Amino acid sequence: MDLLNLVQEKKKIWIKKCTGIGASELLLRIICWKCETDRSWADSIVCIVTSPRLELATTMISRIKRFYPEITDYRATRIVINGVTIEAFPSHHLDAMRGLANPSMIFLDEADFFPASLQSEVLTVAERYIAKSNPHIILCSTPNMPDGLYAKIEKDKNSMYEKVYLPYTIGLEQGIFTEEEINEAKKSASFEREYNLRYGSDDGNIFAYELVDKVTREYDLALKDGDKILAIDPAYASSKFAIIGGEKKGDVIEIKLCELLEFASPTAMAERIALLSADYTDGVFVDSAGAGLITDLELKGVPTRKIVFGQTLNEMTLLASRLVKEQKVAIHPAFTDLLADLKSVRYNAKGFPDKRIINFDLGDAFLMLCYGMNHARQVTAGMLPD
Image (cartoon, rainbow, N blue to C red; front, side, top):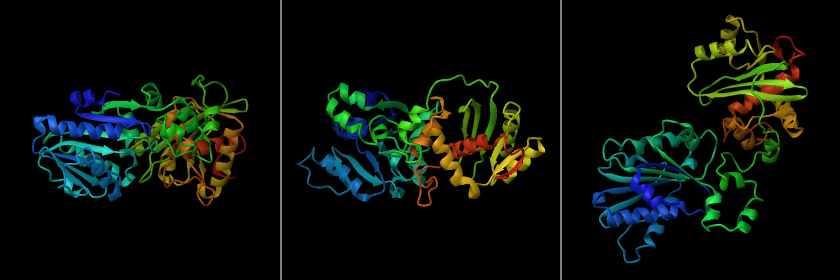
C-alpha cells in the first residue's frame, strides 16, 4: 500500500478501501510530510472535507495535532504546519471553500457517505480548482450505495482519477488484520461492504446476500426458445431508466439483459424498447406511471402491459423474493448493478422496498419481470392485474 509514491506521482486519486486498513491515517501523515518537505506547498491550504457533522471535521485536526504536541496556536478545524494551513470542512458547509487562493490538496474523507444531495456539489467545488492551482484531489472511502458518487466514478472509463483498491486481503498480506479477526468479521452482515469493497447496505432483508449469491452464475446470454419478456422502469426526476429482459427456461427465469441509463432521452428509449421487443416476443411490461412512454410505444406498434405498482407492489415483492429463495431465478455475474440493488434493499414500514437509501430502479424492473413472467401466459394485454 505505497500511497506515498502514488501521491508523488498522481494528482487525482480515488481510493476504495476496507474499514480499518489505515488509509485515512496514512493520508493525514502524508499531508503533514508534504507540508514539511514540499516547497511548492508554501503558503497554500489543504482542505479536508468530512461528512456533515462538525465533530468529524474537528476530529481530523485533532489527529494531526497529535503529531505536533509543540503547536499550541490552532483552532478546532484549522492548524498551520510549516506555513501550510490545514483546514477541515464539513460537507454541508462548503461556501468557505469556494474562494480559496491556493489549495494544494483537497482530501475527501469517506466521500461515498456524504449526503446524496451534496455528493456532486462537493466534487464540483473540489474540481473547480484544477485550472487554478491544480491541487491533489484525493477521495478515500469505504463503499456505500451502488448508485452513489463512488460507483459513478468507478464506472467512468474516462475518469481522471487513478483508482486504488484496498480490500481486506491487502490488510491480511501486510499484517494489518489477522485471519482470526477476518473470520470473526465475516460473521457480520456488513462484511461484504466494510471489508470486501461491495456496494450496498449492511444486508438486504428482502433478498439476503447468501440467497442472491446462490442465484448468481454464468450462463449463455443468447436468447433461446423460452418465454421472453421485457420489464421497463422509466426514469423520473431522481431515478434512472431501467430495462431488464428475461427468458424462462423450464421453471427458471434467466436474466438476459440488464441496462441502467442516466439522462435517457424518452424518444431514444422508445426506439430502443421497440427494437428489443422484436426479440422479447412474449410481452413488454411497463410501470403504468410512465404514461408518455406507453403512448410512444403503442404508436410504434409495441403493445405494452401496464403494471400498477399501487395495486401489485406487495404481490410483486413477495413473488420475486420467493423465486430468489427457491432459486428459480438466475442472474449473470456481469449484472453487477442489479445484484447490488437486490442485496441492498430493505423493507420499509409498509412492507415495501425502502427507496429512501437506494433508488432501486433495476430492482423495480426485476420485480416487474418476475411478476410479468408469472402472468405472461395468463393475460394477453392491457392492465395488470386483469
